[in-house]
Length: 143
Length: 92
Image 1 (cartoon, helix red, strand yellow):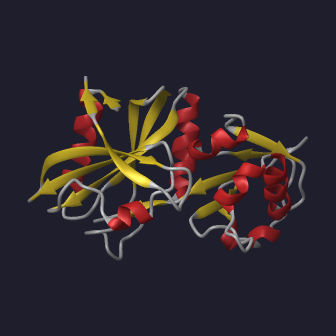
Image 2: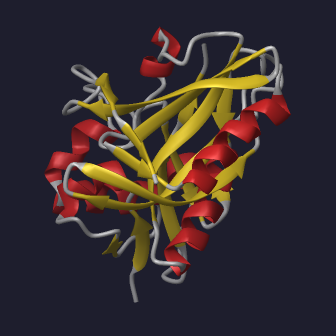
């Protein structure tokens, strides 16, 4: 289960609208609470896949190091990531799974249809390593 | 003084849940070797079966990707911080 405040939820959806028709991407910060992850802030990131931004995203690890350092200063940890699918369902793709490596984190996807955020879904990356990893649907609770 | 290695969230379960590990090392290779010696369960997550660093594992020395320095031969000092950052990517 992913718990997120209304402000943070709307922010990640709005990000996808702003970057449409390209994919947006960013980081979810907060804490893990048993089986739940609680988002306390979000951080936008640039998409380095300028060669194919309409259907690919990549977050620069240097951005992530900065975001992590800033989050640590606030007592937050990286608990997941978000990105958008322009004119495409809010479901993980084979590429999303192949490129997912942060086990135990949430991967949130928003479908953005003709520039408007539609559905937002969240998936937890489960498994013990690359050979058995899965993205599993998890609920989103918006406060 | 030792070199600090920042451990990403998904790998902390293999290092006693600590966000950082300190090692004595002169190069990136020595630092990573020291890390997996201390915490052997990390090895398969960082390295392939033939001993190469996995392509999605990014290693930064302070703010520099070691791929653009001397890779695993990059020298490290006690005051340096190494960050292990698995890639974050995907797309429809």
